[in-house]
Image 1 (tube, helix red, strand yellow):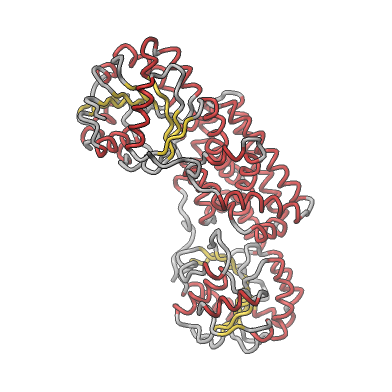
Image 2: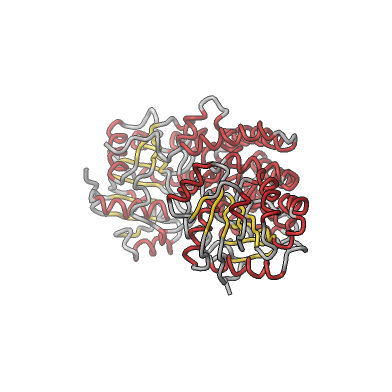
Length: 294
Length: 294
């Protein structure tokens, strides 16, 4: 596997980490980058993350055999429109956002006769800090990657996409876009909402700042995800609105069961519910359902 | 500071770690231990955590100048009753549970003319695993310790208690028992309830096991506390019932604001709320309100 020209659309944490990892893996001969912000492009260039910074999406994509789109989800549609006319018909185009149904709809609307080039993916990796300065060649290593190929995705593109992420050390799971969005509403989007709501609920109390200052290691780990980028998470929650609302409803039912058991002083019921959750969490292992790379 | 005989009532993770740390700090000449379970006592003895295992609380406490009570909160009352008659009048008695108002009430009811010996504390430290086999001499190092002295606590006992925990590397904050329980309902008990309820809410869905298997690093850290000991957490939530229910109410208000902003497709309101929580969490540092040891 070799790519002559890799084009990065979006030179942030996710795109920058992909470029660094690709360079280490040895299959990227030349990496060019485009970012909406000129200063981000220059930063990526001066850090050696990309070999050249381009002034437009069309220039970056021209002649590339691999294009990675790593921009906030609200920018995806416009980027697809700019990518499509410039894209080689045999190229592989991937996009790495945290929601997938909306991305698939955008691709259907915009990619036209280049639709077969496109394979949507979601690497389950990230940091609470944004920007290429935090890019990390090992970000995708030993991490799950969800691939949500479309019926229209070319067989060779899907095959190449798998090889690429396996070469970066990711474990690949295939899901439909809808199944992806339902699952991640539960295990990713909900924990964010709950961490935000906990902090808001505490801070709105008159001594909220004093209370939060007393948090220990449990609070630290529980709320770590609340520090993630607000624009990215606004977009994820609005984009995946229906699934998130469904999960909020499931959560509220479960919370009410705990509230009732505490209120009714029913220690046996409370212990049983805690024990079930505790056993499940104790046995849980990250990536336990994923097979290591072939 | 020197203690001739340290008595550990409860040879589990918390008590065992205290014994190991005390030994390292050099002020404990002889450490004896009692545990309700004979096998725990023997394990602590064979691991060298204690120098002698005693068959009763009275035997362990007899002649001790320092007694540490580290048992599940529901056992505290009975332990106090057994400790009081055997306790030296000049001894320091500490108890390390996660709730304090109930412990103070139990002390008032049981300790009689030994009440001045008692100083309640809460080390903000722990693990998701129980038992002396996980004891760690560094468990309390660089950790907050909340001290909730009673009006009846002897001045010399309070002073000694401070010196002890400072010698183990803890940062001491003084709070009233009621303020302690209100604060920890918010920053510790609530995160546990939310982590339990998230897991329960997911697992009650028909494909719950498949969903949970897809969790990534965010889910891992958010739900880590859910694996904690079910009996300990049943006791904490029932003991601190009123404060926990109050915090659940605050949380539900905040969750509803998020739900409404998502439901109403109001991205600006949603972003503002996320940004506030994100800024607060980004600036938050564990123990930022505590001064390092003198």
